[in-house]
Image 1 (cartoon, rainbow, N blue to C red):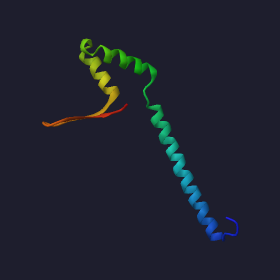
Image 2: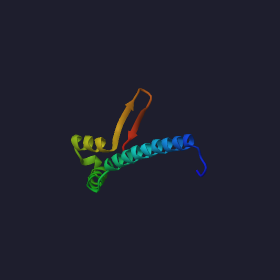
Image 3: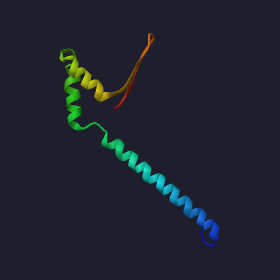
Image 4: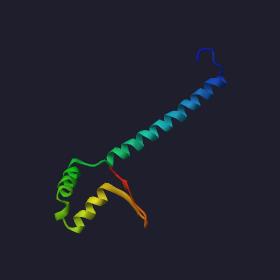
Length: 85
């Protein structure tokens, strides 16, 4: 910004600070999402239970559903799922 006026420089610096704050916020959100990702232990747990679905009890099925589903919506016409993974 060679030859820019003080007003223009002030505006540019303000925008840079605003964008940097937004970038920092997005970095924090990404870190939080990564922290919520499924661990290798949970993947192993899910694999064993999903592979043996017909033989596991209701509580185990509920735990699997809690891990992989965030929301279930059911109407008379349809059922929809919102997946966590």
